[in-house]
Image (cartoon, rainbow, N blue to C red; front, side, top):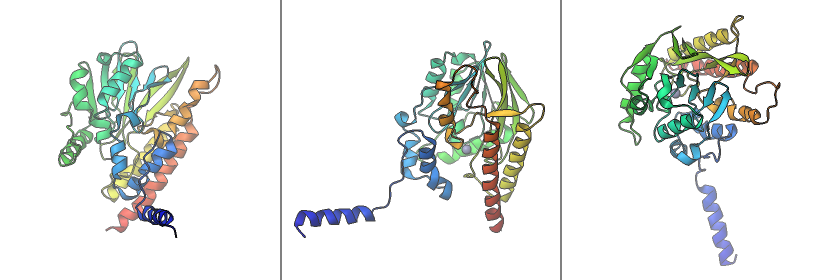
Length: 317
Ligand SMILES: [Zn+2]
């Protein structure tokens, strides 16, 4: 074989032998982000490339967008932050993490809200992607009460403590307001109800609130935690399954059916793809994020995964 061809053949062999690189998403499409997290969800270990992508300001940027007349998405590619607005004050759900706290504040201003009018910040659970921004936001949102469940505050402090020996240490805001099952938090004309939904973590909370689509009022929920990536034992999976049941009852309740899931992770339910329909929606057409069967299907998926996981956790004993 001529020498250049020999070199090429050797190179080809070398490339084939090299371990496959983790797929870093080139955009925020559900299939790409889900693929990037595939290894993490299977093994609980974050591939280094995906780990870096989580902190890439350019790759994570999403222009803020209006989901409903009183709700804007102000988050990033793989994690949501939701701003529920009213003329007399706003509520923010989840706080992101650095380097995205400035992005979050910019997004809030871009949709025409003043961060100083945020009266309540609700945190779903104590993992960095939802809670780490709180400490930096606290002095910047002087009128806001920061809210989590008692266990959520403790888990946030524990995750922050555990992060100190990692390349990405973060600080948890000291405990502010404690939320309990059935509590409501109001800012101006917006009220959010708290549902304790332990499972993803023991302190996870979900939040239910009304969203406006013209003159139509829809009931919405933000399910606080989705993945089984932080499971410690069978009792946690049992709690997870009980929370799925509780959420199903909320969503299908006869007097207050929930038809909108404003998720904490857009790729968990294909939200960006569904929301793209908002751009071309004509008057009188259905709102693309109003989809009760879709929420129930997502819950079916969560329940099936949790049942499989329960078998695995029980077998460990
Ligand atoms: Zn989490």
